[in-house]
Image 1 (cartoon, helix red, strand yellow):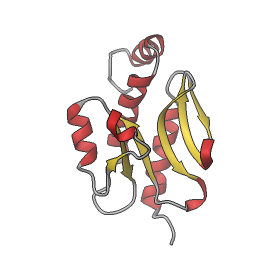
Image 2 (cartoon, rainbow, N blue to C red):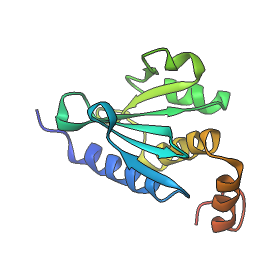
Image 3 (cartoon, one colour):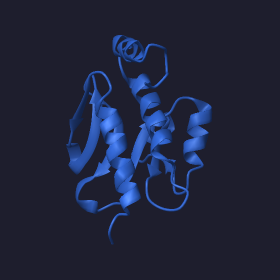
Length: 134
């Protein structure tokens, strides 16, 4: 079954956003695309080859964002014990899937949780004000 174009577009937007964050790199461990900062994953972008539905996994410490992400259709705490520390897996396909802008907000929160303070300060400096997107 083909992945809907809307989901692919969201995935591409989120990937580009994640890799544009200060110090972000892309790696492919376990056959999965991830974005890392300071050698630590801040977003899992899914497995290659379409063997799983398109989605992403982010770490959300903010209770409101965490609850909002979990309320997305098909979302669930991440596997492998990561859900207990705030990681949430969110599908990009299907009715009611979050918009790319909201997904990028969650990726940024995950980045801010994982990144060293100096890189978060750099991100804020790029934007002119803390948390404001250009």
